[in-house]
Amino acid sequence: MIPAGALVSGVTDAYLIGDRAYDATSLREQLHKQGCRVVIPSNPTRPIQRRYDRVLYKLRHRIENFFQRLKRFRRIATRYDALAYTFFGMVHFAAVLIWIL
Image 1 (tube, rainbow, N blue to C red):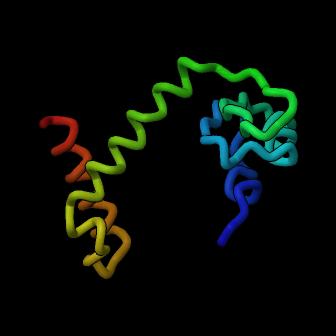
Image 2: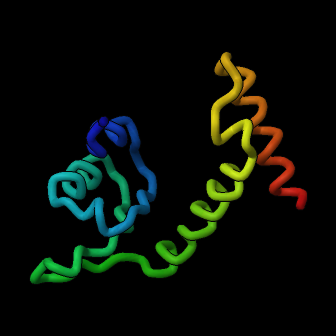
């Protein structure tokens, strides 16, 4: 499994929205150095709760709902396509169907 810091190492000047599980001081510091705005609520066990943009965090559910709908397509969920470009084409097709319907 790849650590979160390695996944976002190339991201600069962006908003990074995550859930409470990603509330690590090292990850927050790395993202601030990269020029990112962190939208992650503090873990409830922290003695000092950090501030975050609640409006952006609430909009995060739209992205999660999109991926949940995308997984309803059996061909995508089970990765039937052997080639990356055909899988990517199916993801595009399913995204268009979700957007239209």
